Length: 359
Image 1: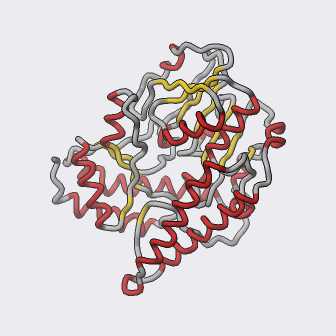
Image 2 (image 1 turned 30 degrees about the vertical axis):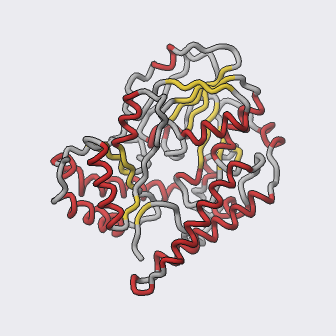
């Protein structure tokens, strides 16, 4: 059953490669999930207040508030904000830490020479470009399962701090190992589902693996700070991260080649990277209005293409950030797909765009 997007399915890899994540980040610390990476830093360094951009996953903000007992301040930033020195105007005090977001892998280096407090960069949307590997921030974090075919996994690295003491705060958690086993089973079930033909398709199989994903997603909120699961670590030890990101970039370029001209005629904007050294997270689109976005999204789903809205924002955010959230859509084109897959998906989208109204 051919589908595109949504949760990762398991991939068959066997060869051990030199180009693993451990090759490029030999001193990184690996935990159960991206949110735990932030939590671990807060606990170890005993910061009192964290500044987080308002355009962010608010489920993670709520997790930080609940688990870390730290004051959270939000500041204006979003994927279309081009005022790179904006954070220098914030009113920092001792005990603060600043979180910066590389939105959708589209941004370039940020300079923090005039920032008086520690800086954490979130590279969950792209862990493999020049910026993420050579960052000048105090700390970098990522949720690995956002960009790699894993059950879980979070990561902390730094080019200026020794992180070895963080390991003493990480548990070997049987609860996390169980979550990982369930999620890997869901990924294997989805792989099986994608490989059967439509006549054999059984909706109960899809319901089953979707239920496993949802069940375990809630479980991440209740874990102690845990090491990355054994299953995820074993996968990463033989996973060619270089090949994955090269394919991801090539897939994005294929979609741009197929769709860029017709998207312009429909008044749909593409989020382009700020440099050719960036590797975009996905094909990011900005629509004329919410109605146009939602109609486009429904058409995609009818064709078994499942896009994401990143993220739904609360009412207390700025109008400009909420406007982006209400009009954006993310279409997955990562390394799980071959060029043939992406050409097929691009042609499906192109064909219904021909008759798609601007709204």
